[in-house]
Image (cartoon, rainbow, N blue to C red; front, side, top):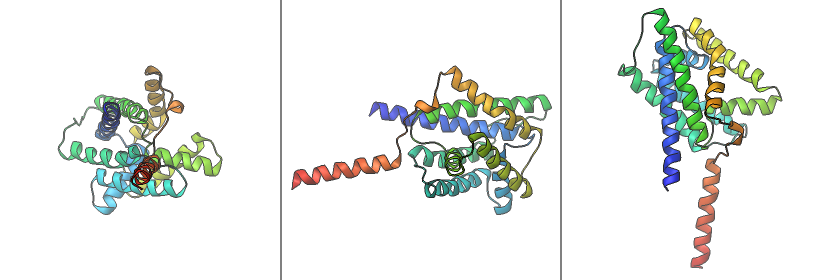
Length: 223
């Protein structure tokens, strides 16, 4: 039980760090990362918060992932709920600073990318499933037989363009994040000596099978 509690704690700390990082990049106010451009476009179109838009988009992506044959973990579900919820808590209550100085805005973006990278290391390492958008990338990579780089680039360009058309913010910050976020993640993984390929994820299907097996064994004992 203690080990499971630590895994869940690690998952939530990672997701909260991702939320903090996302809001820091938004507060930089120099243009958003592609998915957040899309979220902002959705929020403008539907008159909802950025966090609510993130949750809606994540839910749709999870459905697409499932239809495409990707396994869904509890971490995937909590990724959808926790990040969007904490984004709203942080933004609506102004819990993180917003800078006017150009240099401090860039610093805010850099801190945001670092926080998101550490958060990714934490929640992926929990082994409870990948995020909805990562699942989409994997699913499309399998279906199209194209490289991860090509698939990720196409996905991010698509959501960036659609989000921009709907009113999302694109700027120098967008270019900075698209260019550097991968390096930040790679750097954090290297510092913590973390190999994402060695993580064995536990999916919701595994828990369902475990529960079914437990019930069947107890029924057999009764009979």
